[in-house]
Length: 144
Image (tube, rainbow, N blue to C red; front, side, top):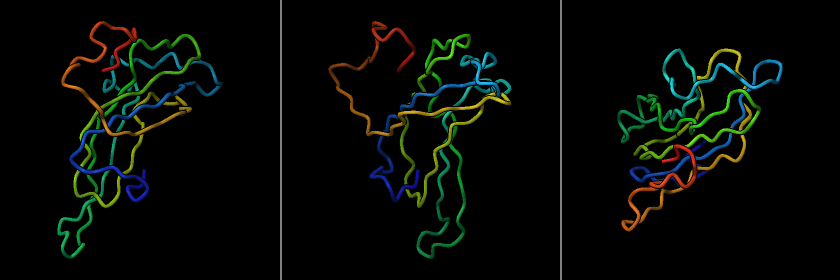
């Protein structure tokens, strides 16, 4: 995501949604994906944002890249025995002062292929009248 192509504003909250299929090299369901172990030996995809900033914005010198991990994860339950679409979801505060922002889905086991569909990044909308989303598990998953 090139920040010049979006209206994303630093300091505001955003919601990331995407649908992903994970397969092995032969196109079968990736049975080695476990969303309950995101960091344990790269067992499940997570969303990482890399942003570029200047150490000195007045001179635009000393460009560096910062990495922000675990901003979104696979929504549970994940069925790793059937080829199906898994939802990747997360809410995060957009970094301020970035000249470029890159979004990547990473950290799956080796030899797992991703097919990504319907990815979106939208400003988070919320209501003080409904502070707990999915409080009755009406979506039957771990969204929110």
